[in-house]
Image (tube, rainbow, N blue to C red; front, side, top):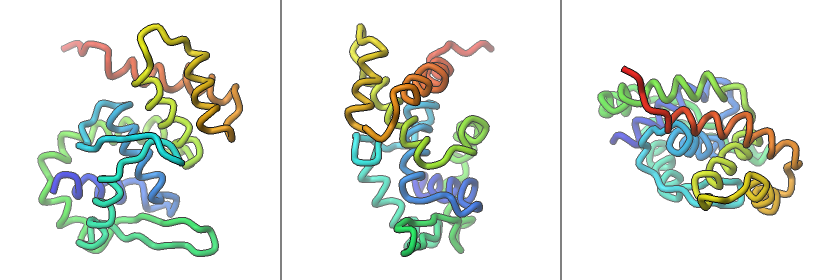
Length: 180
């Protein structure tokens, strides 16, 4: 129930604008997990639109079936809109303790990336995926080249800026020792 609760919470928090879709949900969960250190319980692979979890895709459909989220297909845009569903509160209630423990991660995501569009989240998520799996001595240029070969729609300067200005600082936040 924790996963369905988190899916419902993400839809509630980020879906009210009508910009949250299935692709964005995948990117948000990946960035939460590998970029912000929130244990979402999902494993990601690289796919057409960046980091992707088959289990998350299935759980998103389950969350829709139980009313935690509402998923609407927009034919003329060929996309989905994900919003909080009619049973969102009930689904979240069953995962309350877990949701309390991850709320700061959602806050961090919101403060850093809430205004990002899905294309930017795709770039960011793909770069996080590549960076987390890089070999110890792999140069930044190599990561940028890998990203561009996977995603030729992005320019080199976009990929470099994403790596240096967003991904590296993001990953340093979760690897830095906490001071208490």
